[in-house]
Amino acid sequence: QSALTQPASVSGSPGQSITISCTGTSSDVGGYNFVSWYQQHPGKAPKLMIYEVSNRPSGVSNRFSGSKSGNTASLTISGLQAEDEADYYCSSYRSRGTLVFGGGTTVTVL
Amino acid sequence: EVQLLESGGGLVQPGGSLRLSCAASGFTFSSYSMTWVRQAPGKGLEWVSTISGSGGDTYYADSVKGRFAISRDNSRNTFDLQMNSLRAEDTAVYYCAKGGITVDGFQDWGQGTLVTVYS
Image 1 (tube, chains in turn purple, yellow):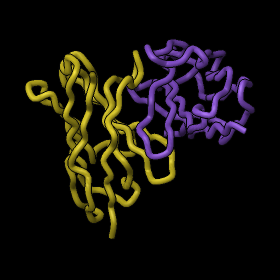
Image 2 (cartoon, rainbow over the protein chains, first blue to last red; image 1 turned 90 degrees about the vertical axis):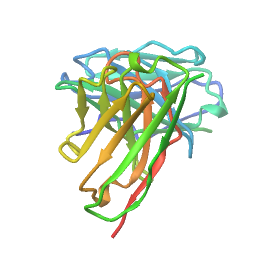
Image 3 (cartoon, helix red, strand yellow; image 1 turned 30 degrees about the vertical axis):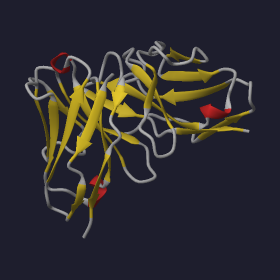
Image 4 (spheres, each protein chain N blue to C red; image 1 turned 45 degrees about the vertical axis):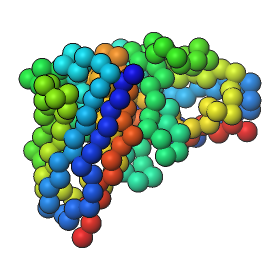
């Protein structure tokens, strides 16, 4: 099962906005609105940031937003803060009852 | 407050078996699908297996199909992952998570348990 494609790293200065892409196929990202995004700090468990493409769980800052166009989903972090420095993973339902993660993106706050 | 606590990790030789367990509290356990996700050292997340709330439907990644079995006991609010024929590439931190592979995402996660397959 090949992973979804994410950039290895994205960086930005405090206060800026950054966008992380997550590219799949019509069998996963493009075919279903079941894309999620997770934040993971070193040595910690992942944390859900976005589910079903653009929904934020309660307690997650509204600086985090999600969208999708065709086979590519995106996570945008606005007003970048030092605490946003972490690894980010997208996931998507894939046909035949499976789920696939992206390879992960390291966000660096300059 | 949702709590998920994994147990059962450890060292095992290739070809061996291990059973992981996840104890859940703070929510109506039987109403939710539950999932195992793993992370090899220094690598990304990999979905392993999901079981429906009733236990009647199970789903597996190709990499573990036929070797791993997921199950749950709704009377005890626990779900397990029986891992057989273990390989070096199964070495990872295994997380249990609340949720299934479609709606809602994995809303809550345990802290993980380390499985090391060594020869």
